[in-house]
Length: 165
Image (cartoon, rainbow, N blue to C red):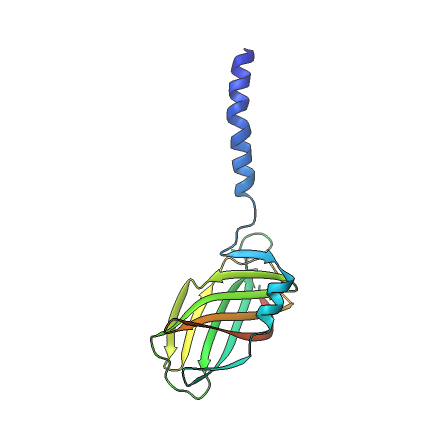
């Protein structure tokens, strides 16, 4: 009888640990607390000239609180638009690589789950599964992109996180 109880406990304890780990908040990407790297990211320019193109970044950040969303709302979702400000065409050699969303010293780092050209001069990329920050707060967003193997970063300051309800 004692041997059976030991065997049962040996099975139940790891199973309970696995179940409790599954209930933790999940992120697409990674959230770190790094004041130094946050400052490095925040030093990126808000307007950038690269490959004879003039870029700016526009963002849309939100969490879903509709009845079909999970309790306490969905994780953060983000759409970024890398825009050529003179309406010049962005070639296919421009690739969106990473997105950084900075709240205080916390940084959500993720790759784009999709990238598409919505107009000749606009590249659109999105990510989901972020942290449950906001709504009603402002964050800084950095887009890391590549042109023919060269990496660049561009910043959009004080971007609001909205909430749908």
